[in-house]
Length: 198
Image 1 (spheres, rainbow, N blue to C red):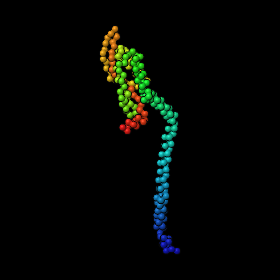
Image 2 (image 1 turned 45 degrees about the horizontal axis):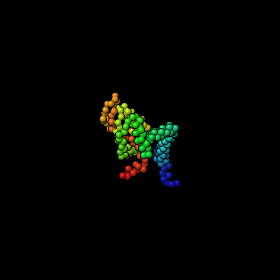
Image 3 (image 1 turned 120 degrees about the vertical axis):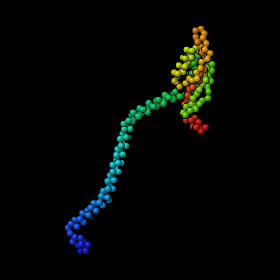
């Protein structure tokens, strides 16, 4: 027999037990550090990934549950956009709009003394289209003209209003009004690109 084994067999019982305990502890530590600890870390990582995937599934499920509502909101936004675009005419519709302003003014009983379009002022996605206007008529007919312009389906702002030549004749007050009417038009993509190049 090997002399080392004989030496171990001759050890007192307490030393044999202590040696056996040391071997078992060493093997236990080696198993724990070598096998169990990496597996526990891997399990922890997998649980974290599983929790993340479950949260992602819940979020996507909420979106899927809200899909009909989101579609309704999208359709409403599309309608709002279409309505906004009717208030911002494109280039082709500007002459028609300006004609309708003069028609409204004449329909209210006013005489146009001046109707002079000014150069457009481009902005981000739209352009301002200013027009110098001078009308004469009764105070009531001028007020009706401004009200009718406000009721047009397109946006038209009246600013820089000044009154002149106020006359009283036959129980009626006639007045000359100078103002700036500004309407707006939608710029097409190619126009905004051209403006950016300049």
